[in-house]
Length: 152
Image (tube, rainbow, N blue to C red; front, side, top):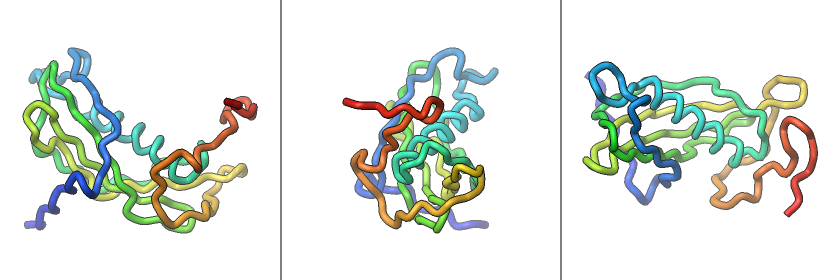
C-alpha cells in the first residue's frame, strides 16, 4: 500500500481560488462531480503557470494520481491551492490541494501537475525561471489574441 503524503500546511501553500458548489456542479449522488473539480483545478493551474512563467502559452503535460478523500455538497464552499514544487527548463511542476471550507476536510490532492511553456513555434520553450513569484511581475502585458499591450 502506498504511503499517503501529508497535506500541505497553510505555511506551504496559498489558497487563491474558492468555489461555491451549485446544483450544476453535482453528480447523481448529490455530491460534487469530480469532473467539475478537475476542470477547475486544471484552469487554476494554467493561470498559476501563466503567472509563474510569464507566458499565456502554457499547456498541461501531466497530472499524476488523483486522490479523492472527501466530497462537497450543494452550498459548500471549497478552496483550491497550488504550490510550485519544481522549475524545469521548459516546465513547471506544482502540487494541488482542494479542501471544503465548511467541513474543513481535504477533498482532493494531486501530487504532481506539470505545465510546459510553449514558444511562438508551438514547441516547448525555455522559460528562464527557477523560483516562485508572489507578485505579478512576470504577468504578460500583451493580450494573447490581439497582441495589443494593456496599459494602466
